[in-house]
Length: 180
Image (cartoon, rainbow, N blue to C red; front, side):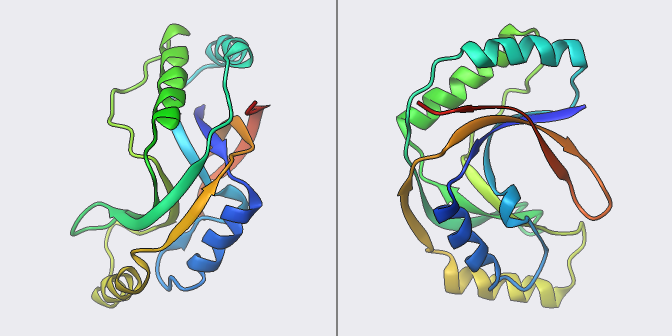
């Protein structure tokens, strides 16, 4: 199964991001209830490995942390794959992401070494975008690229299962713990 560990965002931020998505006229929008900040993604995990991870996850120490959004960007360059809200990097966020990565690796799971780019995905695009959609995306970024939101306190840290479907992924929470 595919899983990811994410920060659950408060309604204040997801509502503001959803209102911003209403102005984005291209791509497959991430539903408001699915907006999150991924800390780690595991494309393949077996149930025994998940059980081990869940045990460690419940015992992990965390503290409150504030996250803010400063700007919009895309992944994929000239061939955009997605548009996202850029989360302002901070030491507490980097430490939490590092703890999650360490916990995953200690559980014996293979977590690819990638640079952590904190973001909230707003929409995904098909492999080939028509020129008019490129133009719409460009206008959206030009008009809203500097969008920001004041810092908020994420409510929980959650392990989700991601199931792929033709109309987009479905996220099922498996284990959640409050940030305290």
